[in-house]
Image (cartoon, rainbow, N blue to C red; front, side):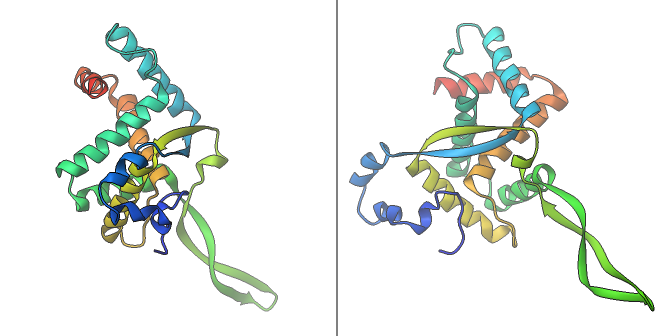
Length: 210
């Protein structure tokens, strides 16, 4: 397995062995956790905190004080996996969503020198260049870095899913960390664009109560 689908890269380790050793190993795996490092633009992080505060105030008594930013990320990740397990999302549509989201949130167009130097006068040379997409590292921007604890079994399941999705993504690749970040940024983008939505907030409450 050459491709890595998270910084943990569980698919390339012996951790894959539980699939070969029977169901009994899964109980042990569920006690095994790892930390994912996630980076968010500072404003988007603050907007999520405001949404959580709104949720607590509007549905007072229904949302625990323990429901915080990391809990929201976990909920979005779990809901995504649940939809994939139930077949609500097709692989092709999901891959397209991830590619478009990555292009929207992680990439920008930047001129880069392409090819060899070209002589235009006896003592003047220039580079030919074209517009080329270059991935933006969110860590270079004003941001917040969050550490999210997750079960290794869940991370591995997500890596396997992303490996399947990669067949529909040409040369593009999305990691577990990027997936969770994209799910959050897409969620918060819709809130910033349309404002709080009662149906969305009620759905969050339903997922919390599961």
